[in-house]
Image (tube, rainbow, N blue to C red):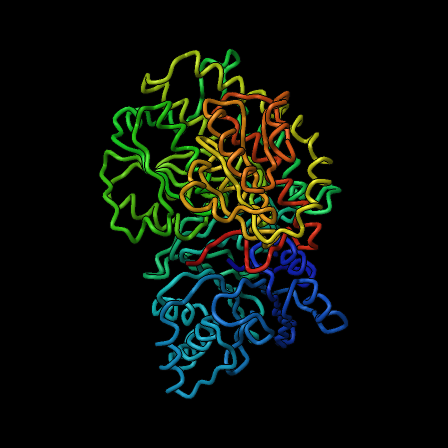
Length: 615
């Protein structure tokens, strides 16, 4: 969940590291720190509670010379956010510094053993235990830093991505990973380390994705060496091209990344569908499905695993796949799937959905499903991430880097890919009509223009949102395909405005939630002109009859809904299964502007980080 960045080369490290921290801040922003080694062997460590800007202020005017360094932006797991618990952590003798993303599960046992050997601890973190263990092994065994790190990691239980430096050896960084992401950027006489590609963009386009249980020795005077932690067997260097540009990491004139990413959706959906729909809308071309026809033809069942927003997309995918493929589909929270002793066979397909491709629970679910013989299909945004590298096949959503913590364009991209998958698999299985494929494929192809039309609601939603800053609770209601959309709308509001919100299938309000309805509790009701429209109208009337305030999202020209609801947000009409894509945009804007009017930091909501890479 935290962000790591490191540099060794011929340039001053500080500027590269501080820029990298800003780019990684979406991974955690409760504290930050940096360690730099000067050429004369002095190790300077700077830390600050709060955002990266606080660290920059802390370092201003101080000595930040050095061409080697490591840095960290934190999302707290062990220990409250403060300067002491911030990374980097140093060994007791002050010679070794470490940054760490992950969780050391057996840190208490290791800590007690180290205390018996005379070690003391100043922080509450598991990471300090690891750096003290490295020092202890190095002194006891009279070995190199590499050997000490490798031996320490063999004693560790848990997840980690680490970078380690030693003041007496300003030419080496040791990096390693297990279940937490870490990549190495290869430049001209310089090397970069980062939790993801964002800090590296603009410096090099050559990257190595460190694999699980690998350790790297990055030496400015020697070739890069990567080997197995367990047996030190050398790994082959797999250098890949990084396809990302600096403009994708900037706000581009918008006030926030979240607003930029909402308004990018017309273009990102173009990228998502490019090359995947034939000119006559008769054929869906999804290589991950077409190259594995037999798996989809012979499947008995599909299980989708995901977390958070991806789980909401999965619920929509369930309905799509069941209707188009005539297959039973189950949707599981990845965090529950792995502990529920799931019944999985080699006739099942398990689809794993994750924006980052590094979600710890989803990655663990992938590994469990593969161990049981299932064919595992990944739907991911980040090229080269752990999930696409660990699945049998899959599809990238291609929506570009998503920096805002609250997911927007990734959700619409996931739903789009799930729609394409359902249609493509349905064609292979001969369970979907040609006319259905053409209608939905044409709707998807036109979606960028439709979304552009929905953006015309921006000013209306902005003005409307100001009214609801008073609210302490919200209810989101939808039916059919839009029940998961209601869940997603409620999640967006909770994440960034801190207003409690619940999403429900609209008919379920009679089974309890209707007791909450009063004039102080607004309801957002998704009411497109679909097969369940008459029933949703009845739900709107039930809310209004109890004094509730209703914001309805309905299709253009629906004068009847205007007479019932307090506010109507009108969207273009699309095939029923595509309404979640269209509806999600006004829901995102509503949450965004309410949060802005409440003075919240929408890009960095409290207690949240972008990628949940620890349990």
